[in-house]
Image 1 (cartoon, helix red, strand yellow):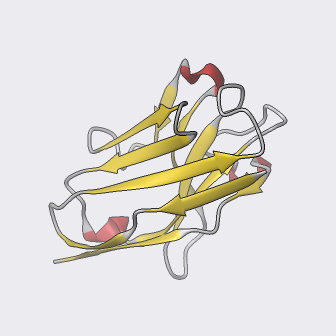
Image 2: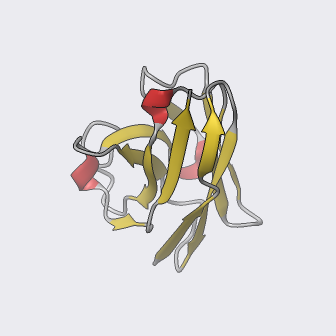
Image 3: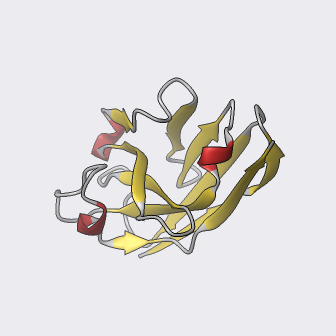
Length: 124
């Protein structure tokens, strides 16, 4: 199982970025993919996730209306489109998957496999 996160960068307030999480070694259709972030000195927190089979999507209150999660099964990739970025969105962003069916946005450590992280910096 491997997850490769990419797409981070530096943008100004109000800008946009699209993060990608490329999956290999398992069926993207059958397992959820979540996006999480960790800012310096803070706990890792859930941002968004898409459920197995892509039936449902979930967002943290702080990103609702600004971020959109989607996936392309043919490319084995899950995306996080981030619009209207704010300085508080600055963090390392990670993608993860959960094989045990326990993963939710609030229980970060129930997610089983993690990508390496991609840095997002939003400056004013």
